[in-house]
Image (cartoon, rainbow, N blue to C red; front, top):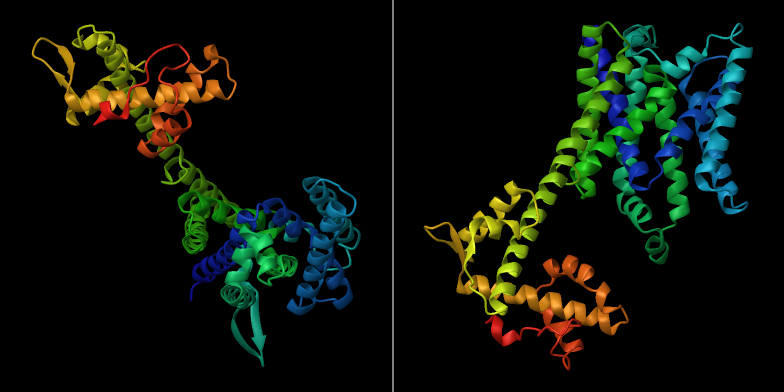
Amino acid sequence: MTDAGWIILTGVLAATSCALLGTFLVLRKMSLLGDALSHAVLPGIAIAFFLSDSRAILPMFIGAAAFGLLTTLLVEAFHRRWAVPEDASIGIVFTALFALGVVLISVYAGQVDLDQECVLYGEIAYTPFDTLLWDNQEYGPRPVWILSGVLIFNLLFVGLLYKELTLASFDPGLSLSVGVSATLIHYLLMGAVSITTVASFESVGAILVVAMLIVPGASAYLWSDRLPRILGLAVIFGAVSAVVGYYLAGLWNSSIAGAIVVVLGVIFGVSVLVAPRQGLLAKLLQRGRLSIQVAQDHILLGMVRQVETGADQTWRLRDALGLASVHPWMARQAMRLLRRKGLVALEADATVDLTADGRRQGLQLLRGHRLWETYLNQLGLPQDHVHGPADAVEHYLDQSLRQEIGGLVADVGLDPQGKRIPDDSQNH
């Protein structure tokens, strides 16, 4: 395999390993704790290096896991025993431990082959030169073997404890009731995050691994509300960021790890814009559709109210559009939909008439509006304060809710303003 292939493979392994566990941190609203762990394990790495005088993976993992567990215990203790707010507990613990790690590395930097630049920023471009030697035989880059093992471990961890992780993430109370210790799952997850973090240090560094832990899961969460799909998307986003980031770094002549995170940021930005579940465009379209639906209701209500007074039910098109109380473009869209549904008819002289179906639906809306006004008035809301809430709710009252509210105010035939509440018989 070429050097570029080894570098890309290392990036893919690091990004997917982090994304797999980071998704659960996002779902548990513990993103900041992931940040804390990725920094707080630094003194564990430094101490393990000083004691073993080598960068062997076993002492590094032991040191990182120990301080990852210590971080979790301290955060929980400060929050639960001394009532320190959780975010403040995380900030106190991780800054103190991270500072300790930086000091240890700085003080002994002249005596050991370890420095804060390596730990904080990493350099994935050196991956092909750090080979694994066994019996005088080279077996490829050491980070690839380490991250491959970590990815397999994470896949087994998530696969074997999937139900437990899901229960503990979404409903800790339910997990306890079925015999699953949410606390144990929490500590196991934090330990796995610590191991993944230290395995990624040499490739992307302590700071950039935070983005790999959080951004893929956060991006995937915008696209779906099903956990298997979120996990799959997070892994895909992590892998894509590694591949694209490598080539982008070559184009920019910049840090590969930094370019990977830039790509992750772009993926998140695109997700914020176009994701079908929570994207800005999807929400704008949803609001637009809702506004047009409300405009249709307002047009029907205005025309029905005129019919109720005995006036001519024919409206000039311009006046009928004005009933919508929205932007003219939305009002025209609402009128077009009403015509398509057969609720209004546009005559040749640019006048608008209610059809029988339109009158029936308008009376249903009017009945819901006045029933809700009456119900709120009976609850104690003054009659001059009931129109606004009823105007907001009338668009969401279906037949069953109108019947239920009608049963609650069955002995009242007039609304608080003395206007007659249409009977259900008029709507059929």
